[in-house]
Image 1 (cartoon, rainbow, N blue to C red):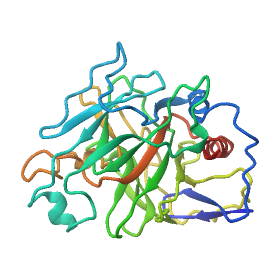
Image 2: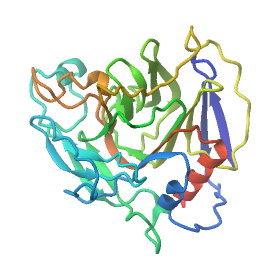
Image 3: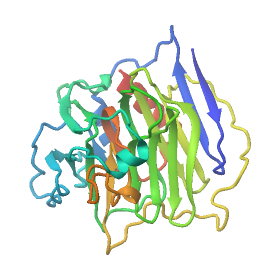
Length: 341
């Protein structure tokens, strides 16, 4: 038994799908033929896959481009390996301690984050289907985010993401409401790109923009605030202008048609190509577990100086994958069921 709820927000054909398995539900996985990571790597549209299973101080792969040094006052903890082979490797970053007078503390009050932010690498895996087995391309583990983040340089020769899918397994850790936690951000300083986060009401929030029109979408879909494991995927199909949020999309879900849209987005012209543009003169940065490039120059941890990006994540994240197509619901359900084990 499972249900599917559709939520509509004013962004054209934005479909939000939330599939929940209640007590007594059995997912028909039929056993796993191979570990979860192997199935992700088999997707032809895969752009990058960060399992976040790295040991501390892991070096970049042989022949991979060198990663930029940590920001001033920050500490690098090693390489966040991209298993796709496209060398979109990132860096695990511990930002400096929060100090009195920072933008982060003065504008946000006193959020429930560690004043000495950190990352705990190679923690026990939270993805049951990624159990280590013969032939696995990944030794599964996750990262415990305590205000630290992953910084991923996105070079000029990287593909733009006109259509995309972003998926991850997350296990939020909550103390109080009233603050935003960013899971993933791929946005330029001009507002081109997208981000997925959990808002002040503990609901999933999407940010999307083309550099001219920028929209914050409050989906009203509640996040798991009890520490439960959640598979989350965000897809965009430029042909249909549909942006969809998928939470635990089991394949035995009921199917309902969403109501018609209440507003068109963007207003005019009706194009958003591309969402994540690559400026050859200004390589950008993607973030896992922290805010976007719009806030990259806003001091979070250092008063009057360059600090870490805003809105850090609190909790566990694993198996973050990025594709340059909008995966269909069957693929997403397969990923969820395979990962759920």
